[in-house]
Length: 295
Image 1 (cartoon, rainbow, N blue to C red):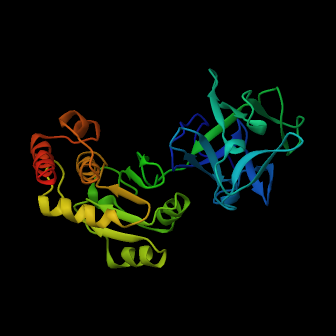
Image 2: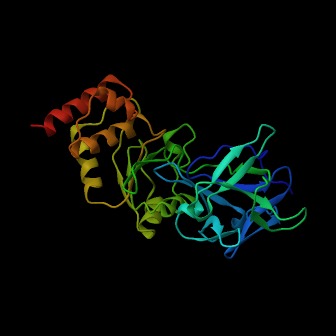
Image 3: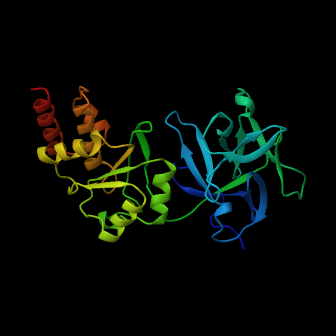
């Protein structure tokens, strides 16, 4: 069997990938703390890697089975043993003109990056060397939280609704959604989606220790002053929080702007638009909130 896609997919935070030797069905897999190449097997989590990007744009790949990061260790051996995306786990992916990528690592935190290479022609093992092996990136379908990014690292994030595909009703909380939230240690959701989660989906969040606040808002409309207060109450004393609506732009941008205003930041219309706010009524509501906060 051959892996899905052609191996030229772009890295996106939170998405799940397979990493192949480009043009083959050999996948990079985690076997305990070790790494090796194994023939593609559909549905095997040890061959799946979650892309995580830090607030300062450092890329890491976490194995979906072991929950540990691909990285470098002694004797020029790549391993999969760190629980955190640290300097030895930072990766650089360089696109080749003929397809695929080189994967560069940062041994001992040194400035010089070194490529990941297959050991010999048929060996299932890899090493850090001076020779580039061409790898393919295959993104799995059904993305979870599109457009994910940290607004305040480790504290406040924003994204599209989970599994958003054009409609607010696409939102879905399932095992994969919760896995994504747990990987980023997010324990609080503020949803501006027009559709509220079902009791079953809310139950899944409760079982995972993730709180959920639904503040209903319709696309291209303004949030009320009462809803702004609800957003701040849901955020103020919570842990790491993600805010989303549908696509993750206008309504989410209003909520992010409101939180920043409650935190004492001075914002103007350009700041609101930079946060994704879309229309005059939304700008007016935020300016009213600013005036109310400032007396």
